[in-house]
Length: 140
Image (cartoon, rainbow, N blue to C red; front, side, top):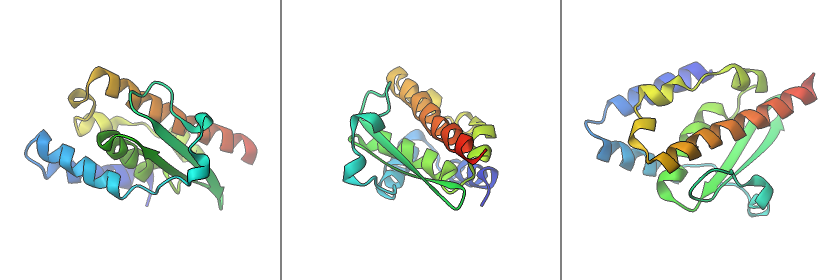
């Protein structure tokens, strides 16, 4: 699936819920499906700076596509990173770099996060995009 197709799926899924309590529960459930980072990568280098909670992200390149794994010590944050990884994992670095994150506004996520979690969300996106830039540089 393309990044756009995955983003559209996520928008549709969030539209099925009537209120944010249900959406938070859905995010928690998504966090439980997160491809977990191997313990050896739970290092200071892989922690996302700017997050209130601890969030670790690791990236590997397989067949010119980036595969992300992650973990967090907080259930909502784990759900947020799970959504981002669902969108960006198994995609070509160039597609990740060029992709926007407008779907986050469309599902209303940012406006329902505390300021510190919203900052953490921005930091997560930056980290994933930085991995993409690094891998794209290797491909060039």
